[in-house]
Image 1 (cartoon, rainbow, N blue to C red):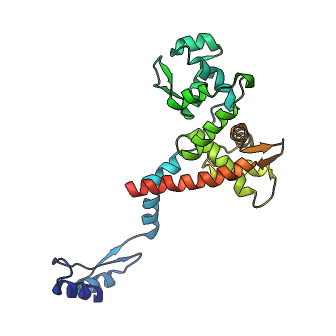
Image 2 (image 1 turned 90 degrees about the horizontal axis):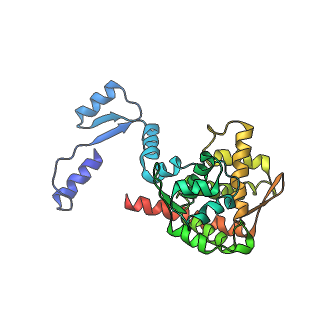
Image 3 (image 1 turned 180 degrees about the vertical axis):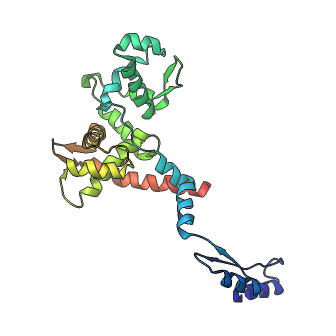
Length: 272
C-alpha cells in the first residue's frame, strides 16, 4: 500500500502517467482469510509457484530451449576422414544414384555418410531427392585437400573445421558433440590428469544431455570413443587406450569456444 501511495504521489507531481493503480500481491501460499483481508484493503492476492515460473523460463526462453534440444547423435562413423571419398566425389557428380554406383556399399552406409556430411555442414541435400551439392564450407574443404595425406585430413582441412566448430558450436548435433567432448575433458582435468576414459564416458553422457539415451556401458563408451576420435582428428585431444589428454590446441579451442557459445546465447537473448 505504501508503494501504491508513492506511485500516486508521482502521478500528482506529473512524473508518472495517470491511470488506475491496482496492487497485486503474489504468494506461494495464501489462506482465504488473508485473501479477503487483502481485498478489503484494495490488494488482489494471487497464488503462484516460484518453481513453475523458473521451469517455464527454462523451457520457453529460445536460447536455452535451443541449447537443450541439440544433443550429440550416433551416426556410426568413427573418424572424420571416412567421409572424404564421398565428399571428393561430389566434384564429379551431384546425383545420389551415381554416387551409390561410384562409392559402392549399402544404401544405409551411404545415407550415414550423407547425414554426417550434412551435420558438418559440408553438403546441401533435401531428403528424398537425387541432388546433392557441396556447401560453401564443403567447397573450401575439398580445395584444402592435400593428396599426399591420402584420405586423412590435411592441416588446412583441420584448421577449417576447427574454426567452423568453435564459431558455430550449436550448428548441429555432431558439431556440438565435438565441442562437448573437449569441454568435458577440460572440466575433468581439474580432478585428475590425464583423464581416465572411464571418467570421460560417464561425464560426457551427462554433459551432452544423453543420460536417458546412452544408459548402457557399451552405448556410453561407443559414443565417447566416437566423438573423442573426431576431436583427435582435429588435433584437440590425444589419447591412449585408457587415457585422454588435452593438446595445446585443445586448451586454446576450449577457451575460444566458451566465448563464442556465450556470445551466441547473448545475441539470441538481445534479439528476443
